[in-house]
Length: 89
Image (cartoon, one colour):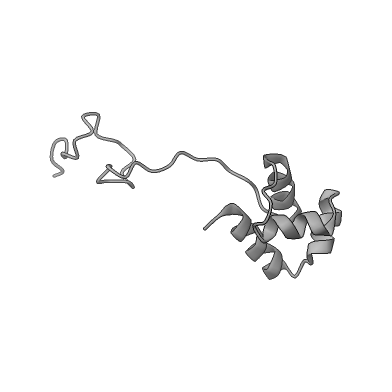
């Protein structure tokens, strides 16, 4: 799900109109509408402002490695070959 789609869903769930969101971030309702409908792409600062205005936080995180057979394992295998190191008793 795209960031803009998530922001649009959060806006709708919060019951905030596009005009109110626009006023919270100092933009025009038309600008916000174009961004949320995917007709224009906002800059990262505008995305961050919209998120904050909706009680959200923009967080960057590394993408999961699709080759990692144990994505939830907190200790990665240094060999990266998917083999289990040692045995659990």
